[in-house]
Amino acid sequence: MEMARVVPQLAVKRSPMSFNTLMVLYLCVVLLPWGLSYIAGLEVRGWYQELVGLFSIIGLSMMLLQFLLTSRVDAVADRTGVDNTMRVHTRWGEYLGYLILLHPILIVLPRFIVAPSFAIDDVWELFTQSETSTGLYAWSLMLVWVLMAVFKDKIGLSYEAWRYSHSAGFVAIIILATHHAVTIGRHGRYNAWFDVMWIVLCTLAVMLVLYIYFIRPRTVAKKPFKVVDCDKGSDADWYLTIEKDGDFPFSFDAGQFAWISSSDSVFARNEHPFSIASSSAILPKMSFVIRELGDYTRQLGKLKVGQRIWVDGPHGVFTLNARISAGIALIAGGAGIGPIMGILRELAEKEDRRPIHLVYGNRKISQMLFLEEFRVLGNQLDLEVLLVLEDSPEDFTGYKGFIDREVLSRLTEDPNHTNWDFYICGPKPMVKAVEKNLEDLSVPRERILYEQLGF
Image 1 (spheres, rainbow, N blue to C red):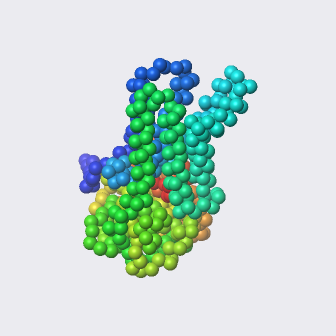
Image 2 (image 1 turned 45 degrees about the vertical axis):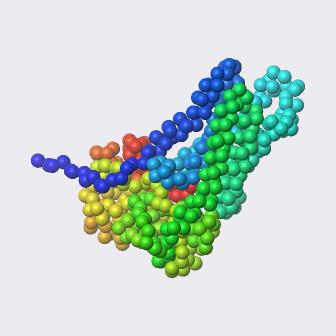
């Protein structure tokens, strides 16, 4: 009689909340001020006025909450996962932009319908009256900042310049928006506590920005690292290894990432997020796979052995923690092999006996990393590797093309594949396409974990 395969359970830590759970929590928090507004006991107006009020309160709540999502406060980040909060920040930031854009339009729209001859004067008053002018200033700034966030790559804005302007701009926007809310909002006119709530939340948001720029760096400074080695691992990727420069506690889980800065000062905001490619077994060292894409990554070859490196991390929930599955599928595109490799190395160190499939795609063979190590790991694990190349040589024995549905269907041939975990890491378009194809192949959404390269 064939014995059932025993699935080993890895030693796990507390599981961070899922992305969907965080989304639900976010919506509850955003809707809370709107719910509290009904405690004010004001007379309910027409449906249109109530709808505008709903959008206004939700918009300001979302704006304030955006600061918390990017603060990297350990008490929050350890529970939610920075990658999850950044995804929520990005996704709802887009919706926030729509709400802010629609706000003045929704206010003046009835006037254009009922009394169009007076509508232009009403619009002019929005810009000139002191009670409404700060709202229009916030609206104008918000429109500019949303466009900057969407088109920062196309306009050639550096990562550092965008981060500084992004933070400074939103501080100005939130102060102006809060002033607008407390001077023109009807709830605060009759219930001072409602205005106090907005002022307190605005103050907390500004304090979080100050924490990010002036307090958090002091914590990072207590745990310095230094460069051990930085070489080109492939035609397109750097392989950076650093180690602790002192005696302090530090640990991470395979698959996590960290913000790295090589500036002389820990207060310089030119840090960049990179995924850890090693397992914790090599501590006090850790390694990163970094694709040469921007101004900063093109300068990595200038790093010197022994040079001080500042590390803010580890962060992220793209790990094996609290996961129990019948098998594991690892899908990497380009530099996405970094965290995937960290997970693969950890599985080997734990002598995991589950079936593991690795799909690794790249543009050309000279960009492939770890090919020899895959062969070694194949002797330690029940590992099957499929290489995918867009531009492949004649003697290439892998799959020629992209990580498409045909490739992914090989991962679902196991009749028990719905109990497998599928890890995806790579550029955003690749991750989205793979996720959709896996769902079309009947892989449960809760079994798909992914990390996009870049925020």
